[in-house]
Image (tube, rainbow, N blue to C red):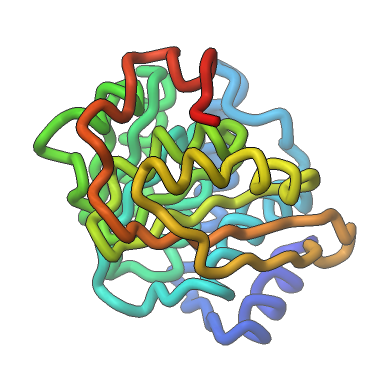
Length: 238
């Protein structure tokens, strides 16, 4: 996917990029490649692949979720900023928080936000389990999202405690998502959530499978969740 295709395909989905936004994506790509030489941010480095599998793929959440409202978003384990930074570029009014367990990635994100001139973005070096038990962040976000972090049964425990009651948890998934959903239903229910929408689609040009699960926070998450760091992955809720 070249830059022109990226711009055109987003326009077809109702997202028209300004010249500034186009420049921001170009600079994002350059900084990603530059920093990737010093630390492991991504295995995807070819420009067309970055635009398709990182930028477009991240923004695909906006085809199904309304980001035009002024909402607060927490992105759990965003790594190099996916999906929340591409979404933020397209919808500059959003309030974005990213929590990641590796300080090097947080350093990259701070520099990225500075270079892209992004406002209302906050980065936290923390484990999601610890972050979710902090009263300053617990059940404070309108929407929490994650992409390629963990299977849904684990991811729900990392994300749902951060979602406000009646807010949304948006899980971005690839292949085998149906199996993950079946295995994750018990955890979603225990943590106060309920699946309200699910979408399957293909990325353009290469036609790889993608799934999006939209989970609404119906009830407060029990106080014991998330459990201590590492426990959700070792012993998922079943």
